[in-house]
Amino acid sequence: MSATKHDWTKQEIIDIYNKPLMELLYDAATTHRLHHDPNTVQVSTLLSIKTGGCPEDCGYCPQAARYHTDIEGNDLMSVQQVKAQALRAKSSGSSRVCMGAAWRNVKDGEEFDQVLEMVRTINKLDMEVCCTLGMITENQAKRLAEAGLYAYNHNLDSSEEYYKEVISTRGFEDRLETIDNVRKTNVTVCSGGIIGMGEAIEDRAGMLVALSTLNPQPESVPINALVAVDGTPLEDQEPVSIWDMVRMVATTRIVMPETQVRLSAGRTQMTREGQAMCFFAGANSIFAGDKLLTTPNPDVNEDMEMFKLLGLNPQKPFIKKMQPETIEAKDSQYQDLGEKPKWTRPEHTIERNETAKQKSKLAN
Ligand code: SF4
Image (cartoon, rainbow, N blue to C red):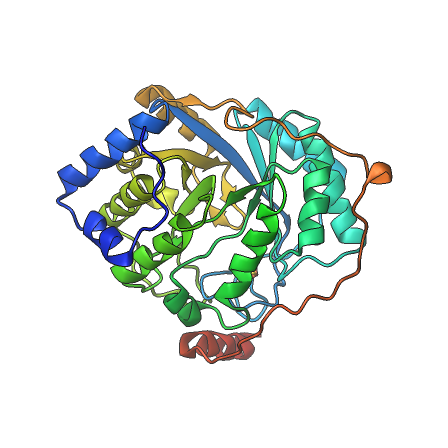
């Protein structure tokens, strides 16, 4: 098996993306078979533990408080509620629970302590625990690791250049810094992006350059197809074509051969044939459950039927990496520092974000 390449250039990645489809699929499927069992797919359940009311302005997100969408906000769930949902996910074949909170960044205090307790509780159920909580400091990453966190999700979303066209309330470098903070622990990194936001192929390749030149590369890379939600700045974007999705998955597989490539948002817009093509092209992970934070997702039973049809098996937990130990709060080495880190706030203007904000003001 050849060593993983970490010096991909944008042009090399564009050339892979644009190959004749049959060649691209063959190359991706060959790479996939060298590094993974092609009949095993990891299944994660995404749980929104705190929904809506987010201060950020991500152009794709219905949870941003500044846009007028149908999302019902919720305060942080209790540990017991989360445990019940995790048990349900486990019984329907998920090996991982990913908890998402609509926060700009984690703040030390009661709510973060509650999330740490959720991590401890799910790790004790012998499931992989992932969190996506926004930007985190090194000390917060260490506290999550001590609690038994298996993975931290923090998407780059797009290329550094196109990021500025989608989000104005934080910078691309903040994303990289959070990933770097996670890398200072034994927690694995999950980081990917969204296609269909109006970006060019160069931007898709640019995002893959940013991810694949990280050393180590992320253990998991979610590829989302935009779900255009009414009221958000990206509400009028055309759905992503299956061909773009397959090309993106295949290219990701080739440039990051060992990562788990995760089919994420947008699966409801894909046929089973389309999803099968993505699995052939190297996708080996999905999110299960009828909601992905706030956007629709196929029903668990539908997914299990698809697995049966395609002869796929759900991956058992802790196959790629050992289960972390859980350290109880009272024995913790890393305490609440109450830090106030200076994450950037570029605050440039994105016309479509401003328009959506104005429309929302009129509607409220
Ligand atoms: S994507 Fe995350 S950070 Fe951005 S608005 Fe939505 S919840 Fe907030």
